[in-house]
Image 1 (cartoon, one colour):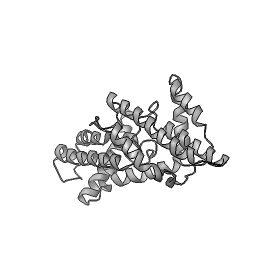
Image 2: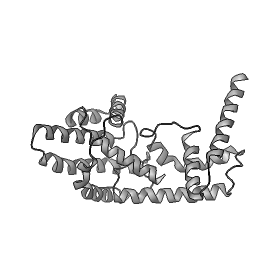
Image 3: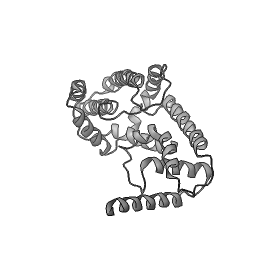
Image 4: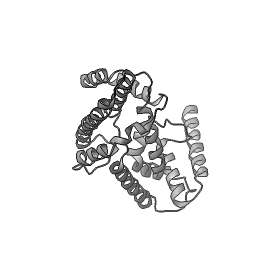
Length: 244
């Protein structure tokens, strides 16, 4: 899961740095500040970001230290999970977005000389502003040292959670599916955050897949049989409900 987190966030930075067409920074600020009725448009722009041709993520490198310091400051008093709808998290996220954009404005914009450079910088600001908005989904902060540490700790807590709830090393006795559902919600923050960059493409639900894959890595077992078994059971259940 941690490897997936790092990979998806590197990909995100590349797309935030894309040179593809995008509304201006002023336009997206007005859109988000409007709030009411703009949720669908923000979601559309977020999908545009994800489908953009990747740019050069190194454009963020000179500002990563400052962005990380803003994350440390803004989330200093928030000890809960990242990426949730907790009131304190949303408040910290708004402050973080404001501070990150200030860092990028002072860095990127001041260094932009030509018209092309100014356009590129403006698009980076606009994409970052949209991504860190919480109208249509609740994002994680950008991947910096502090955030990586927090994500690692959350995944460590998940590992202890499924050990505590599951209490068995036998992956292939999957008849008691309610136990998998109970455990799978330990992955809520990470899976919910990744639904947009990593759409559902596997045989079972997102939470069960995440659970199996993590157990597979931690215990060096092949989870494919368990995934197939759950998938078959879900298909049989759907067929039963359809025919009755």
